[in-house]
Length: 498
Image (tube, rainbow, N blue to C red; front, side, top):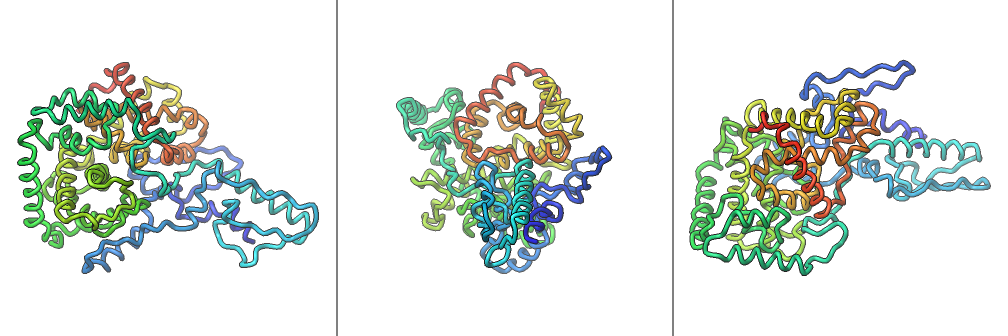
């Protein structure tokens, strides 16, 4: 009975992220599934990991209105999903069929197949024929699971810090030379920003990344003598906004905005302990609420919450020697906490100033960029483009999130930080150059894309690309390919450029 339950898990479980609702059963007649006419229709027909249990979130929000601690109950993933999404290469081989009749005990931690609990004392196979049926059924289930691309769960051992996936030493002679060059540039009375951008394109050393990001984003002036005065003034200005506006979060005209922010914050990097701390979640709520009410043309849009995290981690790393993912924010002095919060707000604001049309009504900036991506891919790799057409997959159905979240849900946070080194060094990095990065990212999975022969499997692949083990080396290759595409196909999306 337990085996049957496992076999039919995919057909009856509605909580699997990325699973299409009411998927029609295969039949002997070869028919095409109806293509969603719009992205909104597709979104309504698809379960996404970020959309599950919204009703539960609403209840948690109402129960915690009077509490000073933000909700943390979403930080614990559901056990069945963790068991089901075990990567195929980590799956243990199926148990060998015994030569004689004997009990067979199945350990869910070994085979990765038991998504539901069986009898407490295991299962007893009564005959060799029963055993053969059970093993065949288990093998069929495993094959079905391996044939479906899945979104990897980010383990806590995947560090935020900028280290290569290959385990390269943290500081080579070349890296030390680069660090010295950065320190020399930053120590000059007037920093040469063009020279700083040139050196930052291939990555910024961790030790100087906070001040370099402040300079490249336009938050700090190039004149060294003015920096402390500017920091003090801007930090005081931010907390003046807090005193002036934050109390209005419960007013009728701002209640819906604050409610959506409050729901989204626990979903931000839910498997990294740092972002589940109540103190950190309160910081994010203040940053996002103040930005939203100061930018009424767009207000808060889901996805903007992700854009705070790289700045917050980089500015926190200025005061933390070890990996920051498990760091206790409350251990920092209050003034330091306030400075990190204010700097994250202003740098995020500078970023959004350049892509705000991504978040205004109907998000025209994103739609323009997705159209430009489609044209660009049609010129770069016609086979991939035609394959999308044959499978009736629209670019908007997968690339909307790539533009809305700047690939942050496709890459580990450590990779996003490295990517943003280049984005801030590149002219129009977050808007125009991001288009070429998305094109290079898509073509990187060319082989996997062409192997998917139907709408559903192709779309699941594109929403669950396996980048969990990526590091600086992979991001560097991605950026190099994007740079090549920028100069080979610069005219392709030129009339879409905003």
